[in-house]
Amino acid sequence: MKKETLGKLGIAIICYFILLYLLVLFESSNNNASIKNLSDALWYSIVTLTTVGYGDFYPITPFGKFIGSIFVIASMGILLGLVSKVTEYFSMIRERKKMGYYGTDFKNHIIILGWNTFGSGVVLQLINSGNKVVVLTDDKNDIDKIYDKFSKDSIFVIFSELKNTKSLEKANINSCHMIFINVEDDSDKLITMLNIKKEYPDVEFLVTLNHSDLDSTFHSAGVNYVLSKDDIASKMIASFIFEPDVAEITNELISSAETEDEFDVQQYLVTNENPFLNKNYGEAFAYLKSNFNVILIGLSKWNGKKRNLLKFPKDDVKIEINNYLILIANGVAGDNMEELFKVSEGVAGN
Image (cartoon, rainbow, N blue to C red; front, side):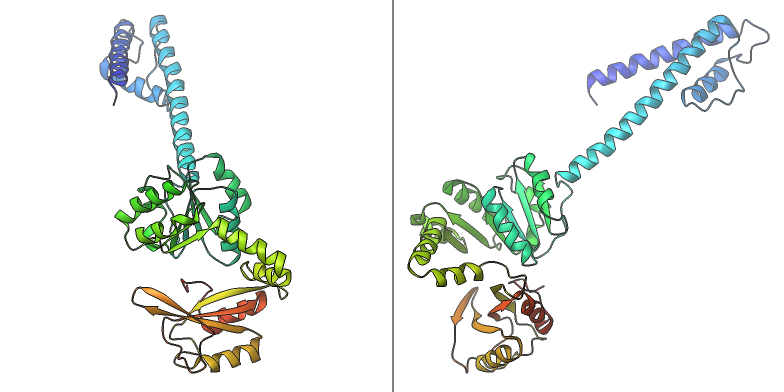
């Protein structure tokens, strides 16, 4: 408690006891008064200041009534002060909740550090694919904008300095799937990633670079997935110029499919409940194409701590536990795949 507050409290207590003394002094001189001693005055002040007002003790002398009126006015101040403090407390709780300071219980989610138009587009695709996202932003104005655009069931926002790794605890980083570092400057991305890597060495990272020549630097630093915005954009533009129909299909495949006429590439974890466990790729390919019009285009197998992607493997390649099936399906078939494989789409598989 601050010295200034303690001083004010001390003065208030002294004034209170002075008023009690004067009340007893004025009232005890009258034979008809109900307040005869300090005990009576103390009880009267308590029931008055707490707005209870039993009426068993009350002043009858002019000066006693004057002091009593001070207690009545003080009781109103106390009541208003309490109401103000309670309102302030709940307002603070709402504000802290809005800022994300109480954290989230999301699991297998994606954490995005930094918010901008590009990040908004990424979140839209992630949520359309059934993922949950935690966004850390250093601009309070972003909070309402994000919640206006996306459902709180799928997104959680935390207001924080992006370099403050402690905020990642509130983002439930130990249960997240991946962190996408979405800050503007490439050097800031590297520093941010290294700071996080110190405290959370097992977390996977994805960054998009403004300069593709830094690709090897980020990989060497421990970033799992590095993409260059310029490389991606230039390839798509060249494809639209040279092979526009191919480019249109490619653009659709990297987006989320929601209807029967939309297609995308999907990935599903192979668990013990998967009907193709310990069966061959060729058998799974034929069954999915025949029954669901789904094309199985690859498998992802673990090679140590890294995944090895097999694109259109030979028919006799065995599908094993914890592999990933990679396929092309429309929005309706995607729902059927989740029911068939008993997992949701994505690398989390939950």
